[in-house]
Each structure stands twice: as C-alpha cells, then as structure tokens.
Length: 252
Image (cartoon, rainbow, N blue to C red; front, side):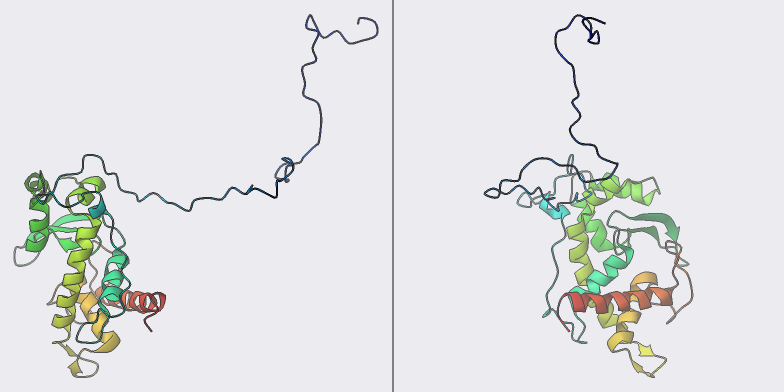
C-alpha cells in the first residue's frame, strides 16, 4: 500500500477494463447509436457455394464454349415446352433429375442379363455405356482416359464426374431423353385402363422406364441396386415432383 492506494506496480497507468454494462449470455448487446441517415444494417448476401470446383477443368473440343458456364444448369421454367402427350418437358425433366438430385453420382459397375455392362452416372443415372453420354465425355481432353476408368470399375471422384459430364450437359441430355421416354411410354398399354398410357400414369411409366429400362414390368416391385426405392415407388415420386414443379412454375 502506498498512501492508502493499492500498489499497481511500476506503471502509472490503470489497465482496465472499466465496467460499463453487464450482460448475460445470449442477451442483446448495445453497440452505439444508429445513424438514421445511413444504412446501418448488415445483411447476408444469400449467395451459396455451387459445390463445384472449377480448377483443372478439361477443355472441350469446341473452343467457343465457356467451360465454367457449362458447369451451371440453366433455369428451366418454360410452360410452353410441351410433349405431344400434353406433358410439360421442363417440369418432368426436372422431376427426373431432382429425384436423384446428384449430378456427380457414380454407381457400381454392373452387367445385365444380355451382357451389357456399365455404371449409372449423373443426376438421371444414365448408363456409362450410353452412346450419347460417351460422345460428350470423349469430346474433352482426357475424356477417353476417364471412360476407361469408368469401364474398368475404378473409383471416380465427384469432381471428375462433373468435369467430364457437367450438370448443364446432363440437363441437355435429360431434356432429349425425356421426350424419348414419353414417346416410348405412350406406346405401351396401361394394365389398369387397358389403353395407352396418358396423363399422370404416363409420367409414372416414363419414370419407371428411365429408372429400370424399357422392358421393365409395369409397376414392378423390383428394387434398383443403386437406389432403395422400387420401380413403382420411383414412378410415383416422380409424378408428385412433376406436379410440384408445375405449381412452382405457375403452369397450372
């Protein structure tokens, strides 16, 4: 003690803190006066990561294409893109891809009873043996080597998948395949009505064909090895998603 004061050591300065206000955990904290002439509110940007990494992306054979832009699927909300059956192409193609909801999906290497082998890949789970898929992949530098890895059953990373078969390329192919699926399904007979598939049943059947092949039994209870749902359940889920898409697109 010096002159009735607490000895603070050699420094002549008081080292705080000075108690101003007390707060409990999670209570609001006073930060000062808000200037009403200025925008003092900090808001989140709302931006989210795309989940795709653009470094080391392969270069396509068409030098005019933007490799980065090709990784981003275009927004699809065209109420006028209608199949001859009356089905909205954008709503159904989105339902078919969103049911899987994974553009970088790579399934196991499998063979069917006819000896056709390959792996289900991408949002719509196209088979790697699909000529259209292979044409897209081989058009890129390193594409042939990537196909060899797919064909031999080697491990494929999600980054490799979206580099060689990008989301936008998948979506373009999905649109084309959606038209083909509807045309094929509309020529088959619905056992419930005894007539050709139409309306919601056409959507279910098109999804079943996409999920398990043209010759799959209608409303089959078989389970796809790459998915926990039965063929019938997949068709029903796609139909529900299709109706939701129509509503969100304001096409009803």
